[in-house]
Length: 253
Image 1: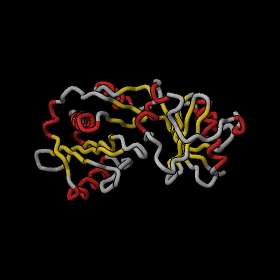
Image 2 (image 1 turned 135 degrees about the vertical axis):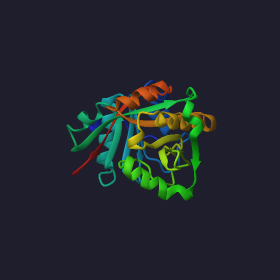
Image 3 (image 1 turned 180 degrees about the horizontal axis):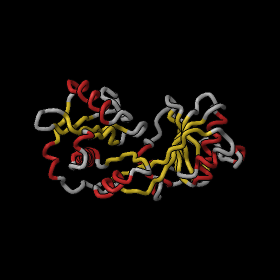
Image 4 (image 1 turned 60 degrees about the vertical axis):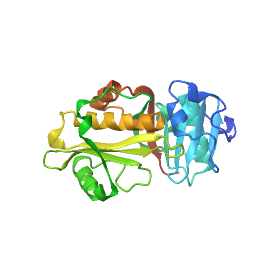
């Protein structure tokens, strides 16, 4: 894999039709079409990549060798900018032959276009307002300290929750957006540790999925690859599982 053999940067991520292929939902849902002004992107034989410049994050989709080559090219062209990457599984090992790759984490990008079966506890879900942000943050800090999205995030369009008989939160979750495309992204779903196993997370996830599909026509989410309970839940709710990805940091270059 040599950066000098890759095709030059292109303005259009969609010329190859990769977004229609299995394993390329991240491109289909995650990259805006038409191209936003200022987006930097690259194309190779069987892969495309684009830069989230504020984060220094290169997203790549396609065949792993070609995708890794595009991330490598991006890193060589913009060494002070590119700090992170997401690509098809296998990208991390190929990149590590040329760049120092730290903390690779396997993920699955999941998506659905259909409403899930109704969960009996969905009737308990309520929308939460900005006045509940302090309560949400306190709940997440206790029951999901590694939450990906916090109250007050500009990317979040909706927070929802379930309350117990005493009025306290027992579950919460958000609808955020994928950067660039604005597609709905479910995030920060958490359940009270003492009340797990009662279907509260499933009810909230089902409700948020239904809300997103009705309003936007789809819902997406990120799942850690080794989270078997989440895998079963999302499969039951109709989320497709075709996009195994890996994310990592590029260090020391």
